[in-house]
Image (cartoon, rainbow, N blue to C red; front, side):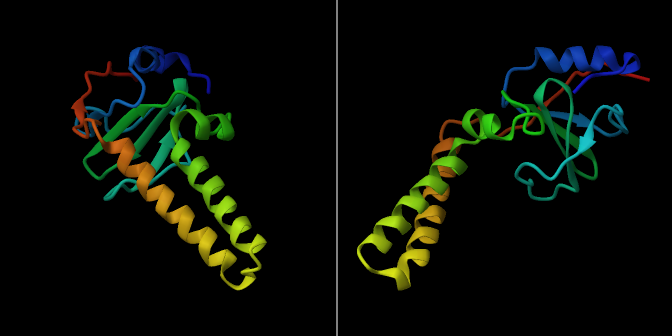
Length: 151
């Protein structure tokens, strides 16, 4: 996603951010984001968030009534959804594959009636396990971002 000149300093700041670290931009300082940020349905919603946006340099933003919470993904989900799954959200891919495998094994054992249930159960279990594993050691605190202003 390309950035326009009025907000280039803001976009350069985003390019310096480490991946997956959360930054808070208070709406009293940044009432709106640059026009290069577009609403998206790709991504997990955060509890209490109003909507999600994606912007330049793999930035992913959750909008809350009083703040923006921004982090930078390794791969932009809008430009490369499969690459994003591999790099930034592998727990979804792994859980889907595990569920598919469990369903196929159940079906192969002539348990067609329970194959779908087995597959969905394995998917849900693996996703939960993946989410738990991802949060271990992760700093969930939101850091206040010192983003430059833009016009």
